[in-house]
Image (tube, rainbow, N blue to C red):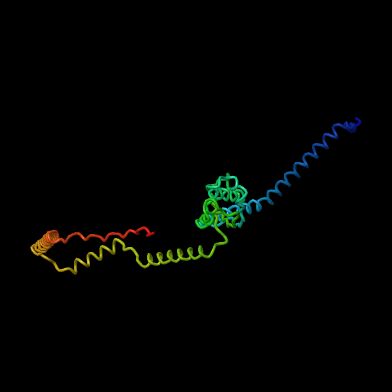
Length: 261
């Protein structure tokens, strides 16, 4: 009988340490990549509503800005007591009121944060200007209280705060005249072309129909009356020329004589 050979088990050789370390690193890298991917997915899911909120906020802001621009609402309102004496004293005496207005503009441009420090964007009120020039070009006020309002367009309008009583009276009178003019315009509405056409048609229908001979007679009568009026005027001028009285001499002025000794 042939003897059956048993399969000999191959003994596994121990792997070197370097290979084990590389395998462990590869496994760890795979695990870290999976974890990073999961973290990214979670972040995207969390950030999506945030981005949607940001988009909504930007839309609301743009809508608010557009509404403000349409209405031209004030963005910034402030009151200042502007000192004018310090810088205007350097100017010539007969140009100090003019210099005071430039100083006021520069002060407001600085404190209201106007773009590029553009002085042209500062609009001074008529009554404020009159208050600075009230005592003349030499005697300007040392300081003045002012109200500044900035629009959405970046234009700053400056007004007087402490308005004197006579100026208040003038302002009230002007407002009253404006209101009366507006009410008069509302009462008298301009007629449209259709209304005018209907009125003309109704007048033509009411008027009696005249023949051509009657129209010619009326025109001739008007011409004759005009000619008769011119002739009467000429005759009156001739009579006034011939019957004109002598020119009325004015009485001589009595000159004051010197006092007698």
